[in-house]
Structures are given as C-alpha cells and as structure tokens.
Image 1 (cartoon, rainbow, N blue to C red):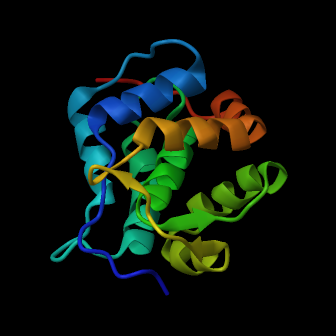
Image 2 (cartoon, rainbow, N blue to C red; image 1 turned 135 degrees about the horizontal axis):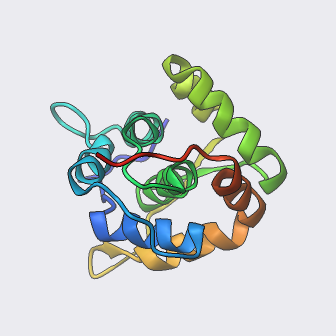
Length: 162
C-alpha cells in the first residue's frame, strides 16, 4: 500500500517532550526510562520498514507505557500522526471524529492495522537535506486537531510515576 522508502524517519525523545508540552500547555513530570521505551515503539522488529504497522505499535505501546503524569493519550496521537506523515502517509480523519477513532484503536489494539489502513493515503515525503521538517509537521497536526488533542488531554488517564 505504501511508497517504497529507503529508510524510515523517527521521532526522538525531545520531540515527544515537545509534543506533550504543547498538548498539556505546561511541563509535566515524566519517567525517563518509560519515555525512552515508549519512543522505541516506533521501531519494528527486524527490518523496521513498515511505517503503518509501526505507527500502530506506537499508538498502542506509548499509551501502555504512560511515561508522563498527564497527556499521554494526546502525545501518542500527535506522535503517531507525525510519524506517519514523516514517512509518507496521512491519516484522513476529521477533528470531529478523531477522538472516537483513536479510542476505538486503544479499545481493540489487535485490529489497529485495519482501522488505520481504511483512513490512510500515501504521499511523497518532502525532506530538507534528507531530514523531514518534524516541528513543522507537528505544528500542522496541532492546527488540524485542536479539539481532539484538548479532549484527549482532559479525558486522559493520570499516571503515577514510580
């Protein structure tokens, strides 16, 4: 279904810290080891070349890890969309339907692939010197999904950091 790609691009720990800060509008405490492990859910086993499958692993795995005291669901949602966009895919879903859609993914993580594939379109990846404009992509996601992000922050689970 997707475009052939030489290698995938990934979000970093600082990218996810930035997403959480923007989503919650304040710096939240986090557990570094859990955050680092949550970020690694973007990577696949073996060849690590299936962006759609890896995005599905990320959206479910990040929320399971709950690395931040607040905003994990919104951070996972924005991170998944950014990862997909950075790797040539767009999830075509409106701001009005996105929160319900992502909750359905979390409720049935075994079927995340089919739920994603019906909403995906592929596109060419635009890089600047071989690197995607991660911050620009994240900004576009915040502009496209303000209602969903706000709702996911306000209804999300609070995590206790040990």
